[in-house]
Image 1 (tube, rainbow, N blue to C red):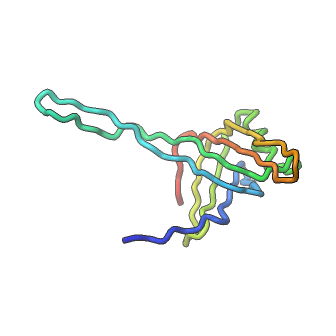
Image 2 (spheres, helix red, strand yellow):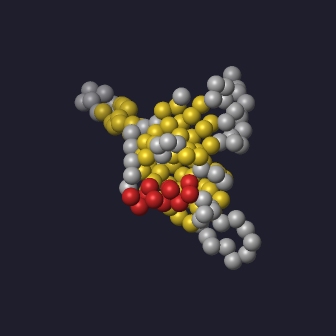
Image 3 (tube, one colour):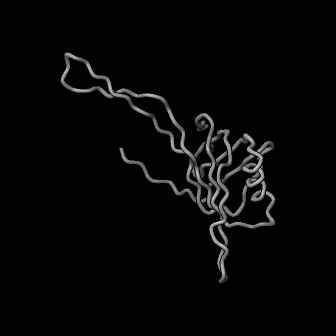
Length: 137
């Protein structure tokens, strides 16, 4: 049965303890969760079998309309520079009941994308590496 795609407009991003909401969010790419596989060969069987291995959670990215005076934006750089294990929460819009993706991890990238010479929004890309999976609740 096909389902309708939900709009993700209105997704939220929070971090820290207590949680601080990051404003001017442009795009959130949640952490991908994948699994390795391994091959098993048997001498009496012609075909190799594939089996699931370990789970792996990849890095997520957050694109923000950067404001150097926004303490929530600068706090992400502080978390990177201090190598602080941090709590994160992504709010998924349009779900009933409301759902969040939560995890702990490290800010591993803080990149100001451009310093515009003409009037346009300055953007920032933040990369976060979860430690051990995510929880959707």
